Length: 113
Image 1 (tube, rainbow, N blue to C red):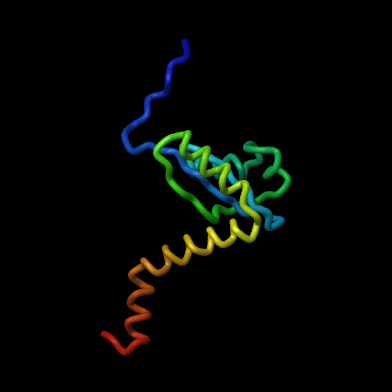
Image 2: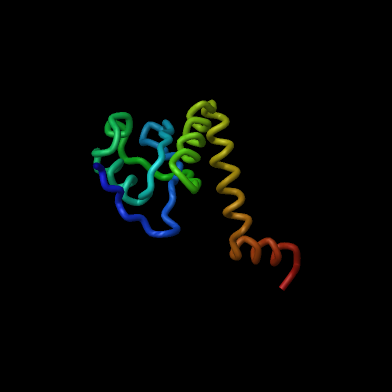
C-alpha cells in the first residue's frame, strides 16, 4: 500500500508558466514551485525545457487541489500564445497596481501628498 506524504495545511497546488530562453512558454503544475523552478533550470525537469535553459517564472496561480490545477493547466495549454501572454500581462498589471510604491507614485503625479 502506498503511503501518502504528510502535507501541512495551506499546502496547495500551483499552475505555473515559465518563459524559456527561446521565448517559448511552458505550462505545468506542482506543489513546490521553487523546487520545480530549480529542477527546470538544472535541466532535470522536462525534456521540453532542458534544451531551452534558462527558464524564468512569468505566471503562477494557486489551486486548492490537483484536479483544479490540472484543469487550469489544460485550459492554459489550450490557449493561443497571444491569449497566454494576455493572462500574464493582466496578472502582472494587477500585481503592479496593488503595490504601495505604484500607488504613491500615482498619487504624487496627481499632486497628492
